[in-house]
Amino acid sequence: MTNIMWRQDEIIELEITDLSDTGDGVGRFEQRVVFVPDTVPGDRLLVKLFNVKPKYAYGQVQELLQASPQRVRPSCIVADKCGGCQWQHINYDYQLIAKHNQVTQALERIGGFVNPQIDPVLVTAASFGYRNKVTYPIGRSATGHIQAGYYHKGTHKLINLNQCPVQDQRLNPLLAEVKLDIEKQGWSIYDETRHKGLIRHLGLRIGRRTGEMLLTLVVKDWNLPGIETQAQQWLQRYPELVGVSLNRNSDRTNAIFGSETRCLAGTPHLQEKFAGLDFQIGPDTFFQVYTETAEALLAVIQSELNLQGDEILIDAYCGIGTLTLPLAKQARHVTGLELQSTAVQQATINAKENGINNVTFQVGAVEKILQNLEIIPDVVLLDPPRKGCEANVIKILRNLKPSRIVYVSCKVATLARDLKLLCEDGLYKLTRVQPADFFPQTAHVEAAAFLVLSENDQNS
Image (cartoon, rainbow, N blue to C red; front, side, top):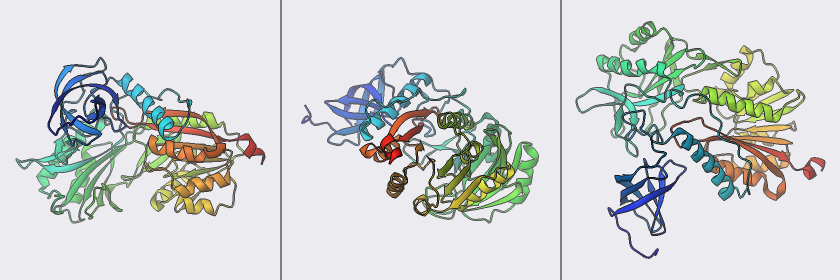
């Protein structure tokens, strides 16, 4: 059957049977895979094929013949257009099943693990209104009005928003009203095709526990006439707003933030409480967007490690110390490793603010610092970016042989790849994986994997 031709723009009938790790529905036609956005397993559809390849194609829904029992009405009126969420049309309980399956499939297919112990996906109360940080591209409509929102799926066409159901609802007034102020000021808007204009993005951030907010404009150049006066007006208008900043990004790039940030009014950071500690968070600081679920996952890690107060711990890719500092309160000493010097500066301040003295932070590439360690850690915590750990980091850890490794991942494919390498030849055993839903209404899933050194190697 696979030699039957299929054609660009051909319309086929398709049943969706699965979800991909990017969030698209997956069906099979003539034994070949078809990926269809905005669909749910159980949907039966007419689909128009595009991007046709020999073994797979993408499809666009032409008609919904029979809706899946798991299909729901989205909470957002532009959910079918906006690229901010992929899964608002999917029942939330089924989203959790899909994310659990995503972790299972990655560990089995990529990692080669047989029947790994994967706990139910960790959730907290809200599947909407959870995001503590948002960054919106700024554009201008055909009629000249300022717009802010997310891009249409698969394009750079801006979908204008005045509110967003997944962000903390206390940020909605700022999203709607700051656009009007930008329009009144007459500031030019960045055009990515010509690399002209000033304002690129609007960044909003809130401390979920404190309610303190930050407003940041990402600009191509510092010269924004009248911005200091406008910044003071924003502070006066919004009592919870504690700081207004400019961030300069003058490069032709898809990266949102540049390397330089200037505070124009108020303070350059907000205060937030996390795991009973006080943290300072800046406009471009990495901090998990779902505060409550991050705390819940930390509690699982603390419970699983059950530190007794005499352990030496390494926190690789430690950022501002979000996990380092709570764990330091239960260990003898923790060393945090981080490439970004600004993050280490913030981590050091956070440690001092909380009176935590048994931590050391080192700036540099994780693999280089690990090579020159003068200590043998009992526990290593890994929390790398989406690309996972560098190959040398895995190699060094296999030589160091810490008794336990905790690997926190935001991309299960690279998690599975790295766990396979760590567990090679039975050196480590994967005892448990705890998925966590840090991004409801999207296909993203976080996971913490727990490894223990094999008994033979502990005794060697």
